[in-house]
Length: 203
Image (tube, rainbow, N blue to C red; front, side, top):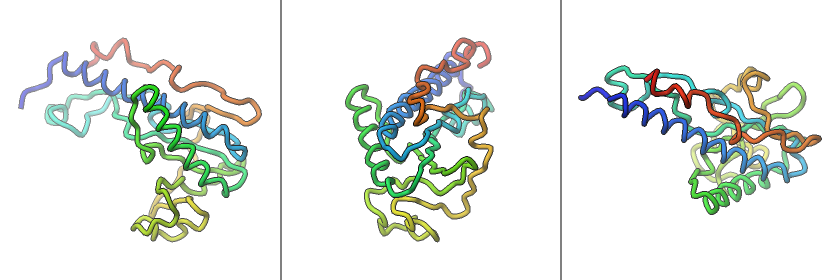
């Protein structure tokens, strides 16, 4: 298997940066839609889409074979959403789908609704309640619906063995996007991605 060239490494780096940029556009689109739901207190982008990318050896060849690091591959979009109460979850589910449909219509950026993970939190202690389900009905009759507690509140999905760590929403690890009192705080898509100027040199 041939070792990747510097040009191929740079192209892969650019692809990872472009992927993060598209995910940030989607985060903005979904946040704008969620901001229209009265029960939404705040929205923050969390996870790798919110942070500067780091270098790692990826899962795919030939980079893995040759132990060549590139920028981290963002696999989905993680949004933390604080709610007053849980009954508007079906509305949030529809808002997410409509926002992504509009994003594709306007910018031809295709991101599936299940790629936007929405973690539901409540209160100042950031009590984790579950994830917004991506199915069109609740329950759906799928294996995922059999997890204890899943669907007790309609469209609130639970995952077996999953723990939401409090540091996932630590101030230095998130990108606040919306607050009910102040409106849209920032746009993720307007936040410069680090590494754009040095990805060739470090490849």
